[in-house]
Image (cartoon, rainbow, N blue to C red; front, side):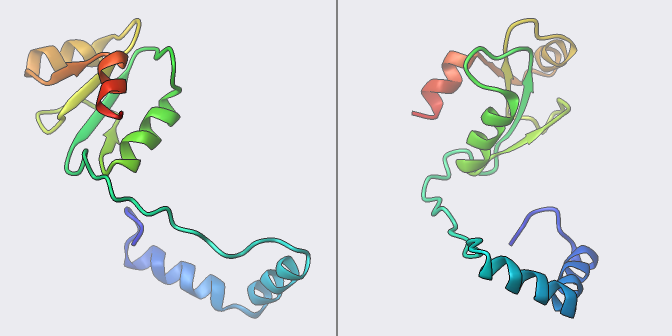
Length: 120
């Protein structure tokens, strides 16, 4: 299952792959040596399951994309806005209004070092 794909989008994807021209293209790609087998990484560590993170400020060791991927790898999700439902705000240098909002809402604020400890 892929998050954020509803029945309409799923049907459109299915229809795309049912078209003859798509099937022909896939066959040509296979003949050209493109690997079409997906290996799903087994995720046995869901330590962040049900947890929502918001990233703010500049991180030293990770890009925001890398940090988001790590959070998702461990079963969590990221959001662009702080709310009462936010579990953690990962605050880097020069964190701004998101940090202030998290403080006002009593959301747990973690540093990059604390985040690194959480993903060990």
